[in-house]
Length: 78
Length: 179
Figure 1 (tube, each protein chain N blue to C red):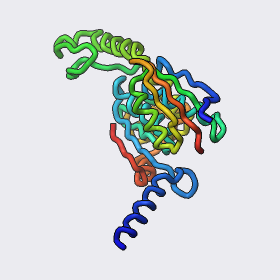
Figure 2: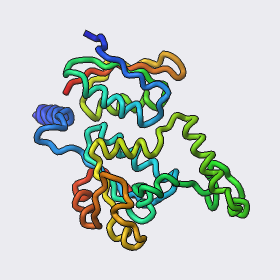
Figure 3: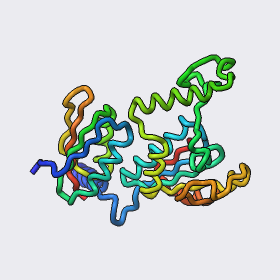
Figure 4: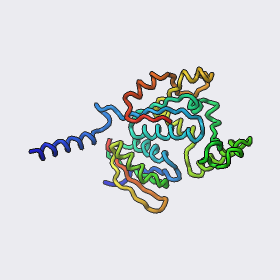
């Protein structure tokens, strides 16, 4: 099961908003559910993984779809 | 034999690092002293504090001296960046030019325009997120007395305290920053 139940559009937001909004969106999910995050901030490629590592959530994938086009899948583990 | 022991130790370390923050282990903690009242210096405390909370940390910011302006109802709406003695200012001009009336206003305007262009959230917005997410915002009582700032001059959600209040929190902090 790697299908996102919800998508967070964090495009055109700069640090630290993508992480803050991701945190908020993930909290609204049930444990085991997956959040899709869309971002344009190049810093998010480093920051979203750092955030998942620090909070013990699972980063299923991080993709660079274009120069300013990033997509992440995060599973809520706790 | 030694190899076995080392493996066991390594494994237990990994397990410890994977332990959830909730439960018996206390959350990581960050303590910040915000001592500056310029527009550029206003951002780092609220950016780091809000992000730290999103990373399950406990955070307190101690606003002291000019940093008090960041939680002052009126003054926090008029934060500025000066081009004087600031070679990295948005408008790098010789100090003698920077002294001309209106130059600080112009540098501030330019910086705000840059920030907006880069989609950076407004300072007030980040500060609001800090308060809503439970960052302890501590106004320095002594500085308030020195500068004649009343509690009613400060924004909602601020507590007052002194050096001991901050240190009581900071003594167990994993990260301590002076800004």
